[in-house]
Image (cartoon, rainbow, N blue to C red; front, side, top):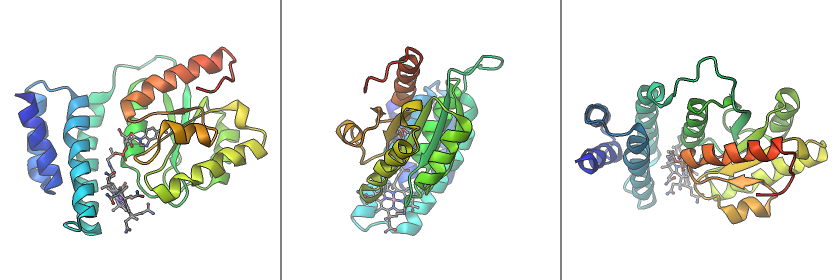
Length: 224
Ligand code: B1M
């Protein structure tokens, strides 16, 4: 039953049909489908299909932009439902997040930020196309526990290394844990550029960030 409705959410997003995407998301919520499943099995899978159609040249940039707008609109509706009741609780930790220089993809990064906030992290979002100097300045200014860097292009993921090196040059590398993610990024890549951790999706990011906070508090500089 819930698979049925999630397929409808996925396909209506892939077909760029805002009205039906919203309708099926409402229906899924009414059926009691978990909001996490709506995001991961419905919307994210729909975006994957959009990417495949773009690769096969069935869709062009205009269609991809429309899909991104639909995703964002539905997320605006779902975001309040992600939040647990964190009011009055001390945040678990502070995370600065941004999409790396040269890259303007922000749907995944925004989702990671929303899920972290819903799980009681304080999140400072630097936006997209963020140069290394801006990451460095933000780390100096806000002294976060964790710096999160997102990259969606194979060409821009290499720019993450420049951020790690810039932090090293400024003597800030040991003050912050670095987590990286995004479609082309892997665990192996994360290690190779000297990041502390990798997470494959927004919900894994929460688990990994909790672990990084623990490690930081224990004063361990061991790489994960
Ligand atoms: Co572009 N794009 N795009 N695009 N786009 C991809 C990434 C691509 C795979 C499509 C394809 O060809 N199949 C391809 C990259 C190929 C490559 O490098 N290997 C591509 C390309 C080529 C381009 C352009 C170069 C196209 C052009 O102009 N010719 C151009 C580049 C612009 C630039 O950045 N300089 C471009 C532009 C765009 C749009 C602007 C039209 C739009 C972005 C709109 C926006 O973000 N506001 C767009 C979109 C939407 C996509 C696809 C279709 C969907 C991405 C997405 O939002 N997915 C994408 C195809 C695909 O990924 N299959 C594609 C949904 C989102 C929830 O998932 O972002 O993966 P994702 O995030 C996940 C995880 O990756 C992870 O958690 C998230 C949530 O669970 N994660 C993290 C992400 N960041 C994390 C950080 C973490 C931890 C986990 O810690 C910090």
